[in-house]
Image (tube, rainbow over all chains, first blue to last red; front, side):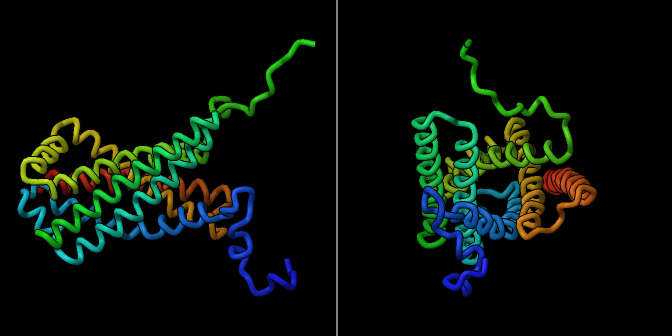
Length: 131
Length: 127
């Protein structure tokens, strides 16, 4: 490993951007990064969702509009959909062998994740800001 | 010479089921289920921004027996994928690869998911 041009770089740094797709370990790394973020966010969400069991419309909006809840929900939404689309992409790459179907599947996955993610974030902001 | 198809790698069902392989495929299944759950999560939040009627509809769909069944499955999937995901993160930094440790952490993940799912529903239903 000890090569003079890469002595200062970490193992991860050296493989970033390599490989035939020039994406290197980007996919792998972001999947782990979002996983780490999701551990506390999901635990917080389960406790919060439990406290919202049986809540009516006004109570739910009041909870959603609280600054801290809105921030954590937006972070959860981003990490969740990013992690989900990366995971589904791997499943498609593993089991769908036709190149056209595989590409179409990945495109649909990314578009659906983006649509749901953006809609959710906008819904949170609408309740938090516009009330 | 007769043209024969290229040999395939052995299929899943050829192997004797082991806790390691079963838990690996379960991680994938629960992940796919949770991607569906993410869409339900999205619908729930968006309905609250849409209006009282939309929110009531969402609540009644999730409060039906079928909604509870789906939520029960998603709750188990969530705890399983969460705990087994942490197991994966430990492997990523090189911890826990010995076979006896793998079995122990595997059983711990299954026990955690079952207990937490039941506990979540006991708390949820008592509210």
